[in-house]
Length: 487
Image (cartoon, rainbow, N blue to C red; front, side, top):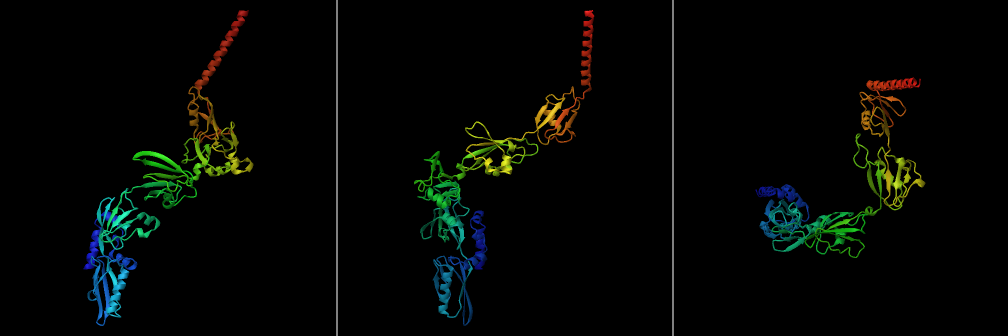
């Protein structure tokens, strides 16, 4: 009955609130699991409420005794007297009890096992969502009690644990979780009061460090300790000569003040950081010189068939002495299908004339003597390869128009102002390709096609003949008049 009562009590406490469930994973294990775990580990502390079973043999048979640990850690061993287990682990207590029985009954083969684990409460207060009693068992650690109950301002670096006898100890859960300092995450004990303080100094470090993040610093810890101990040190790409510190708050006023330090400076290690400071470690590439690639590039999402080609710009960082061909390798997949790679050129500072460069040849038929050394702020311009479609005949604005993929002849007629209705009826056209072969009007227009709007309006032709005939009659009449006057 005692075991059943203990199990029920565990169930009531484990289900008492969602907050407790979130914070105490140990308590949602079954009673059987807790017994197995307590029996297996070397440091399970004897806990009030533990139930043990003592078995031994005598001449009259096998005897069993159920023993419960009292609130003062006393165990009543019946005919073997009492025993205090204060400060003992289960393994230590088992050895003492079995020796005690063995002295009274040599050869009795005593056995001392755990039948149920005790539970107890600790009190949590301070910078938490709410002050409350938390139900624990012998293997509940400080981190189990705290988990899920802190706020954004809770400090995990200096938690106070006040024992039942008023002894005060301070622990650092950050060191326990990040550096494996197990002693900083102890088992809690019956009657403990856990006090979580408010964080006093918290800073953010990001950029080229191994463990970027937000860290709470203890008194006396400076910039050097933040980077080496907490952030794990500089990465291989870090530029530690340009560390930037942004001070958000200064003297209770918004500041935004920035400091720049070199890790070799004497001030670096002990530089005092303030609450909410932000420390940025730049990448070495950030300080490299740049060149710009611009023009027929596709750097964003893939274009659809109806998108118009548009110029784009890409900033490329390079190392001193780097050649153009090596940069082109990284951009190879970014050139637009409409790019005129043969007609590319470089615009260089303080140089009046552009430098022509055949990118297609550099990529596909490389020759070192044709490669070009990059200079800071060079502009590598890749123009669009321009195709044209010719529109002529009975349109308002005949001429050559830029080719656009996947367009019908009507698109180009509109560019040419449309057909002249006095000369053309029904947009009748003749389409010929580059080789003067007539093509269907249903065909998608190709580069160098010619669209001829026919002069098919009968009234237009009649008017043209009428003008010609009228002119001829007028000229004839004039000639006859001149002849008559001369006679």
